[in-house]
Image (cartoon, rainbow, N blue to C red):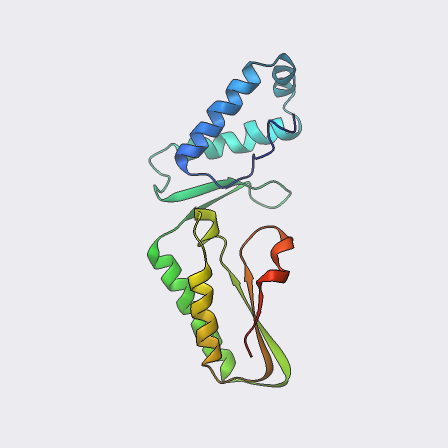
Length: 174
């Protein structure tokens, strides 16, 4: 059963949602043990039928934005899924907000302290199979050219849901 739902919580386009649902449904119907477990609706079968299926249905409707990715969220938070839509405007708006925050912090006195700026790039880039490298280069350049009253400046790029990538994504600016 672990193999059946190992990638239940990945970001998917509408077409990928359909392919995943149809493939999983076919796998369940071909296996008598899976059919029994599906009827019990326990564990990942419950998640699939009660949380993934409604998200899948929405993804196939005319209400779902065409340039979006959907993801089932596994865990005990107050929601079951995420729908993200990337537009060029959203990336441009995000960089403007980050640059605005950098300018705000540069006006304060942080003498004797270090500043750590944190940017979340996953929903803007990596979820769409794009690299955030140019975005990070732009931020680093702007930060290096900004005068800060602080001992050190760092940039932390959170670009993956896994925490293993944190060490390689901390950039010393100055």
